[in-house]
Length: 243
Ligand code: SF4
Image (cartoon, rainbow, N blue to C red; front, side):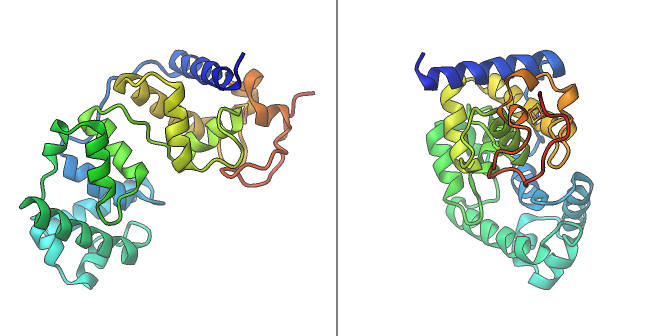
């Protein structure tokens, strides 16, 4: 069999096993796409609870997006200080709002629904401070576009089981994994959610619970005893190596 077909089959097999484990989910996202967009920026390297507090405080102090854009930078940094790196995120948010309002006349991105996936992706990633992960999360969760967000958990688990190579970045994994999967938003949403949960609960960063893992028999990292060097994973030998 062609190696690419092998990897596609392995990806689909892992997807099916995690579907069975976690159950199929209907696509859901925040009701307001602007909340998703700004919330995703705030969420970078930040717990969910701290992201929620940062967003709520910002919106209480600056109820309109124009007020967020025009706020003194130090005040905005203070408002979002429960998010990590507020001094980086605040100017990102203001630059983004400045660009968005100048280009479209308002802080509203509902029009993305009517663009093709490619057009919407290009438009979003052309915005200052918006990368592939934020764009794919927004387009999949809020507009049901067939894209695949690859966050740190999806990256780590897919790399450990071996469907992406040991040096493949999260950015490159997006297109690679998408080439193995049906371009169907519901499938991609479940793939993202399930690999995300699996990375949080089982295939954790430092101490993966391989003994409890439904992917163990197909996992390259497990078979290597955790000795493979992966761009997504710190070097640490996993304890329950296959004999
Ligand atoms: S077997 Fe271990 S390393 Fe492999 S996916 Fe499962 S938890 Fe992760």
